[in-house]
Image (cartoon, rainbow, N blue to C red; front, top):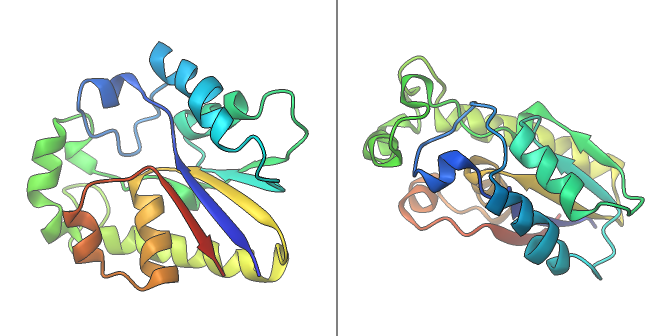
Length: 175
């Protein structure tokens, strides 16, 4: 059995401006750095995390480094944990991306990728965890697409339902 905790990356300037970051490799804002070192750090202080995985985007990796500074827990970056590539809608107002998100389940965002492609990446990642991290507690620091992939593949929640709800930046799963 593997226990998987999920944590969304800390705040970025794109988040604060309500922009869709997608694959844009934006840094954490000052508030995000404080958030990672403070409340996000405290949330996992006593959970016995064995291994941390983040997307290869700075905002996720830097969140992990700040959350676990001074602790000897391995942190691995994995591109499969990236947010969806919103293509032409990257760094556009999130409302523009959300307006076409349902159609983008199977049809890629213009010059980007589909949400199904994100789900396929996440399925591949989850399948790789199973034989290699038995009896461990894993923390994944990622993005909305990362969490949706976990919810979809582990709990069987339809993607149409996931994208219509509000994003909650924490989760716990067992595989």
